[in-house]
Length: 293
Picture 1 (tube, rainbow, N blue to C red):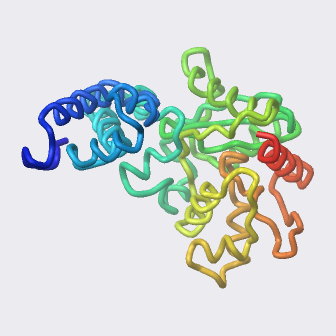
Picture 2 (spheres, helix red, strand yellow):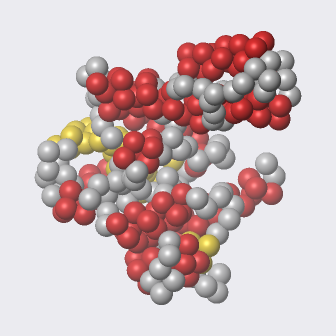
């Protein structure tokens, strides 16, 4: 990424060289978590002065520079023939659900793709016992497409087949299970041991309206709640309260899309696809973590 032009009067050459060295470091470690405090320490500056100096010289913030380098690495791996899932992890996107927003401006598939019933898709799945009961997670190479609670593996498998009747559904094998196992373990830690909710790559399937609702729910912080009316207003459709509630009910990615944070206007729980007891448990857990971080 070219740096913004500066005159000698504006920037000390030694400072320019230092920021360019830090830019090279960021590019080399773009797949890692790079806190501003860490970068500032390497530059010998306070976080505030490092942020301001880096942006003045490079033209963008350190965070934006890293994001551009990471995205470039992701695209390069795809061009070299890597799988989407492989490129996602190698570029450092293994713990984010927003990679596709950065690449193509949105999450999920078109309604026509969903109506195809997963035709041509290869979906792997696994089952795990959690604090809230038996859980199935399934994923395409693009990301997690299905997270459901159920009473048995047979019932969950039937539900997965109902959602994706024309897809190639496969139980995770040792050769394909590594990423899925990591994601399920992270979600289980969240449900069973109060760890933060994992921010995983998502392959959302729904109408444009549903995806707007789900994306808004991703912005609701843990421990907070919104009414269905606030949810509708938040996506620019204040009269579509019932439709917003229906979009929550259509969510097939439990917990990762936190529709449990949507309540009735009077504060009542409303509905929940996986049972009100689970909704109440999730909310109580999040409020507890917020009160006692």
